[in-house]
Length: 400
Image 1: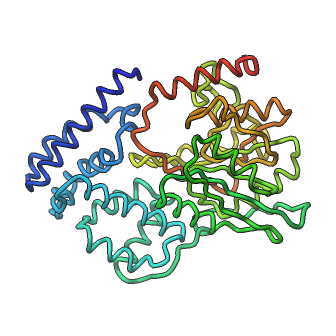
Image 2: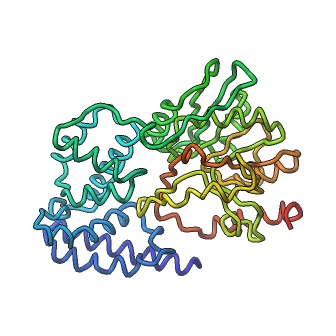
Image 3: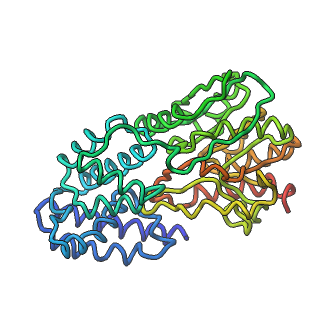
């Protein structure tokens, strides 16, 4: 997408959201519906729908839900809102609740659901639509929600019930430390990220530290700051919008590092070869051990069939995505070149290669490791292309 196309798309989206806001404010649902009908025309194709911002994403779905609510003679969810900001607050509150309840993070699922249902007039159609859209296991979560609404069950959900299999890995070291490093500018996202890390099963004799980095000048600068100040056997660099849903990540990761001392970094998404453009997902052979949720949709199919991997337990790759990067060695991040928020990750892959270290993605035998709640409206413009050119100029001799 060119910069001109990007700006045109954002301008159209902004106008639609503004008009809907005006109609909702005056309780004119028909007017809001008429304007919303334009939104799927702009965002209906697969490349464009992920470019909606957060408010646009919520409206996109509620527009789809509206006709079904009318057919079922339910109260139309949009009717209860007087501005787009409240629409988004309601949508993201239910989105986060359903996810946290499914993975046993929500401490008071019954009370919280009753509170949300009372605060926001979300129809049953809308609620079950969200279950189908965002759940790791939609059938199981749908039954859980209905049971909660009927007052039949309470307490935490079990992540083991979702099909995660406890690995039988052995540890050569009887003790060690793991540090999760997160650059953050969002306290709410950081708290959710930390809550999921806190639910991980920790190997006996190991300690886990959660290490946020505030006000980093760039991702590479923030990671260097943490790397130089934290003493840990393994450092795991994750985005603040990453949720570690598989409780057995460390039980798989640490034995793998012990068995493969030549592997310096493990991720959850990457490619076997480096595309000449420098953009890793443009490569032909991509591998995933994660689920992507960009609010428009939750891509459960991003979890690749384990049979596609070259090895029984892992896949060697040339580049990894920065959402989750676990390291067994400390190599300086290139903040001298990548002083922003792009290409710090694939740059580090090249630095690992220069140091003689291999990169890998473990087969998702026990279930996906993370959900990346990636921000919507993430259009790649001039800033991204600037760092892409820096990457290709610096490292082209390593992969051409």
